[in-house]
Structure formats: C-alpha cells, structure tokens
Amino acid sequence: MALVSASDLYPYLPGLDSGADSALGTLIAAVESQLAQWCGFYPESAGGSVSWDSATREIYIDGPSDIDARMLQLPLSPVTAVASIYDDPTWSYSSSAYLVSSGDYNVISREGQVWLKPDASWSWSTGKRNIKVTCTVGYSSATRQISLATLHQCAHAYQMQKGGAGRTRSQGKEVSSDYNLPPILPSVRALLAEARCPNLWLS
Image 1 (cartoon, rainbow, N blue to C red):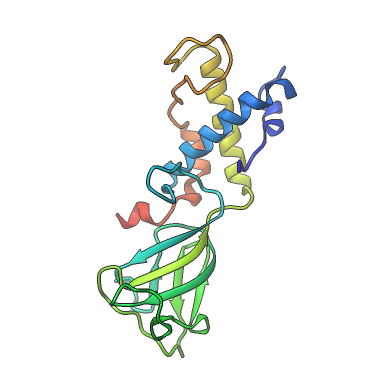
Image 2: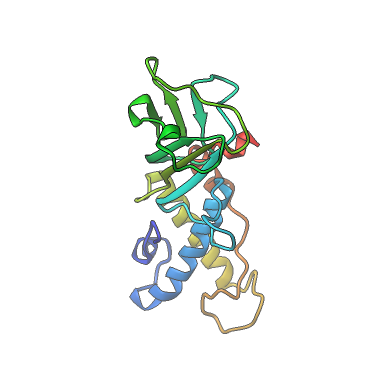
C-alpha cells in the first residue's frame, strides 16, 4: 500500500487530474520501492518487492551487540511491535524454554533495538541464528520527511519520463513501467537521512 496518493502529487504536477491516477499510482509504487531500497529495506521473501510498508518480519540474529551485551540490534527500523523472541541454539524456535518473556525487554522503535531490562531474568546467547525475532517493521503512514521525499522524487521521475528520459520501450507519452527510474535526487536523499535502516551502517 502506497504511503502517498496520486492526489498528493497534483500540486507538484500542474494540469493533472484524476484521469492520471492509475499511471501515477504505478509511478508512486515504483518510486517508493526505489526509496525504500535506498533506506535499507529488503524484500520480505525471495523474489518479492522492496517495501517500507508496515509488515511482520522474521529476523535472525547471531547474538547481542558488541556495544552492549544487553542490546539486540535489528537490521531494520522502525520496529513498532515485537510478537516474540526465541533465543534457541537448536533453531527450532518453538519451545517455551527458549521463549524470552516480553517483560524482560524494551523495544526502541526508531533505532531498531531490543534491550534487556536491568532486572531481566535472561541474557542473550551468542551463536549463528540463535535468536529469532518476529516483529512488525516499517511505516503504516508516511512521516513528513518520507512524504516530501516521495512526492519530490515522483515529480522528478514524471517530468523525466514525460521528456522521454529512461524510456526502454516506446509506448506513447504515458507514464508506464517501460521507463527506468532516474537516480534519487540529492535533496531527496537528505530528506530520507533519518529513515535509513541500521543495516546500512552495520554492514
């Protein structure tokens, strides 16, 4: 589901109306995927599209952060909810013996972090894929920065496509998937700086 709508684009593209909604919707979806990938999001499953929409993800972690043994650093953010955390060296992720009590940790949404509380009865183990976090990650609505970034990049892409730039197959003058998207504008990158995911600096 797109975080901005075709009607949000009208002020950026004078002369367009609802007759262009379908084409603009296609463009918005493509640009949002482009921007989400730049921010560090990746497909939920193999072969899937890249999206920053709020969704449930299963994330596997080898152990706590080197910075602090109480902290799990997830690769994506924001993390808006955690359904379960298993710390399981057998990789079955089903036994209650390895289920970490939700009362033992706090979630820092923006940073994509899970911290054990000072009085927690658990300590994170270290081992390949020992820790499985099932959580909700992404945006259910656009922040102001994401909205502005998406609209500016969409307007730029539309104008470039209207002039024929990036066309891979001739198909009239309409916006279509037969165009390559232009590079992300520096001003758009600046707007999205705070939306970049932790995996971009963890790698």
